[in-house]
Image (cartoon, rainbow, N blue to C red; front, top):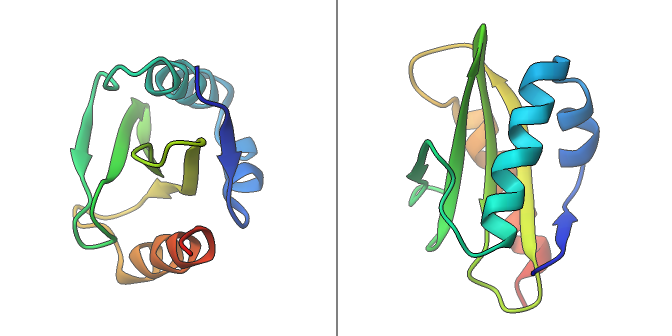
Length: 104
């Protein structure tokens, strides 16, 4: 099972999720660690190749952007509450910057 590594403020952001959303994020990330796909996800090609977004619906919409294709770990790049239909450019940029931090 791959370890999870949180990049930047992704862990702090995840801790601000309501309890139910945080538990759901943890469950879905555990599935990713085990080599499975989360229940509800989509590719985030705008962030980078192999980057995916876990979609959580617990009253409101929450997202966890991660990359699991690297051999050493599952990297959580960003976690946030989704406020509009489309992912904001600000959230995409945060995830892109986090991805740059882990790539050689």
